[in-house]
Length: 362
Image 1 (tube, rainbow, N blue to C red):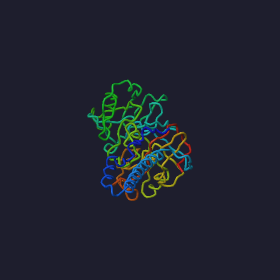
Image 2 (image 1 turned 90 degrees about the vertical axis):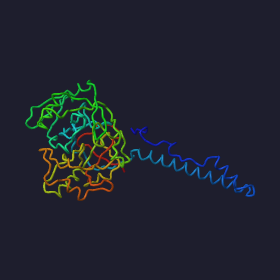
Image 3 (image 1 turned 60 degrees about the horizontal axis):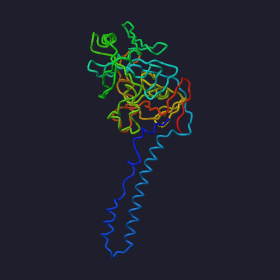
Image 4 (image 1 turned 120 degrees about the vertical axis):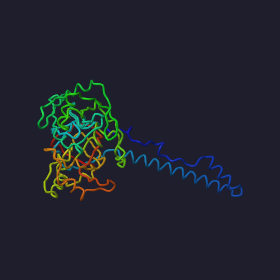
């Protein structure tokens, strides 16, 4: 369903005011009685036309914004879903699934949710694979009820986190890109486990959990150039939006230009599709998969994390694929960050599955 309450413009904000009655009266009086009624009528007519024109423009702008947020009635098939990923911990390993429930918070199956955990320093500031690439080597998995998460990492004994229990713990505050978020500290045992693996120390890092069922962050300052991006698209602990899609052809196109090909997983998508040509997803406005409908919110800009091998946690010594992306995938207004894939906001919730048909709005 379209959440019309989220449309940030109202009729009264868009209708520009016409001339005040006092101003018109004064202007008519200043023409003098010798000018007769013709001048008076002309001025009143002009004022009326001006007010009507401004009001009409306001209505036009409001209608345009309303229609822009309506999904299309006609769709065309472009491909099918070939891979689905959920990343429970920000910057850590993915869990490949055969279906996902798509909510306003992001992809989920019970308490298996996308970017619902993150690793933070003791002051609550998050870390990512940009500064700590071995984060990708922390591999989560969930039990059949999606209530308990178990973590594995090279050289470490497995450790489990009771996710359901975190919902009963008093929340604290953490920080994502300078924005304060509600979080629950997951305890000393997993904090020590992460610190030992990532820092070779007994302390320094902690694991926190996002306990809410809805997004709470505003649009980041750097992302406000993307006018379609709204606070409801910010997800749990995501960088920008709660859904990212890339096509197999886009990955193949980049691989054809680099010495060592990478998998789609290196771009950390939630949804991978086959069928469309390379980077066709750039120009999609509306996307429909199964019951769900998404809006293309912004291109997915890429950073040095794209160079990290998800299997080894080692960044490419050649700076690839980011170096090659910069050579031909930069977009106006986005600075030095190249684009691969698109970030979406959900406009109708539902479930999607592997093999499902992907449509785009006509």
